[in-house]
Length: 345
Ligand SMILES: [Ca+2]
Ligand SMILES: [Ca+2]
Ligand SMILES: [Ca+2]
Image (tube, rainbow, N blue to C red):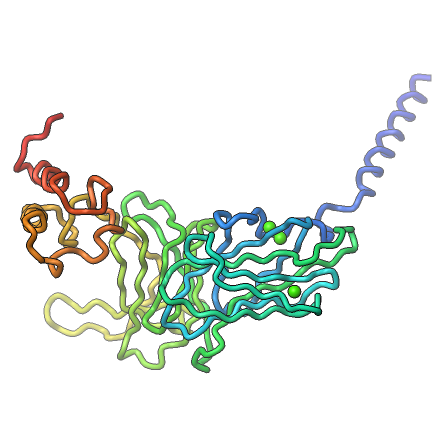
């Protein structure tokens, strides 16, 4: 009796295990599953899209009210950007919208009338550099069944880009002091190639860039983020790097003895360390000293010394009292910091 009971239990266990195993694994994705970029239904959740990426982002609409937001660093020097939704699934009708840097103001939209399956290609140029947003919505949502195909491929291209072949270059951005990754940093070169560091991927960035034709003239790569000093580095873009990869290179540092060292540029890992702006650094020389106090007093006295004040003072983070002006608060802060004035505490 006891043996029978045990064997019955044993078979019941086998039955339960095989019952569980017979269910489809969660890896089989139906159209109603959220795509890998979710949650992105609001502009503040927008995911970075790499401009001119050879692999478009594949999205789906997993619910009728789904909205898919992406963001990128748009440059005014680029004649036009082309936002493209292609390879639409049979149940997918796409509407594209481009939003301004505030994420609220609609700049342009496209939804081809009379053809629900039309691939939408929306071209736009920007007056100012900044982070712009694209919102993609399901124009005429149907029901989302398991067999619904609501997928689409999203990419941003530059139609008038030079015909040079583009290769991908990677790096990451972090705070030079805390070493914390920094997202939403605006990176560009003087070739009008731009990238945005990914706040969802440890500050990593990817840019598709032409190869340096010679190692005599470097490109200039800059990175900007509010509250940080602008980062600038001369770079070359090479397809011959260790491991057979593409990489940035930077000019080799010359020896201190005056003798020329090897002029071959050295590989650069693309890691950008952003230096926080010091409060009170009005002149922008990365020091807070009496020169800053003198400059502030001159401004207070009405002197025009705009050439001596750091660029973008209001956005820089150098402002102490957060009124974006230079005033007595800055003077007092600087004098305390330099020890010229006793601190209260
Ligand atoms: Ca989606
Ligand atoms: Ca979404
Ligand atoms: Ca459409």
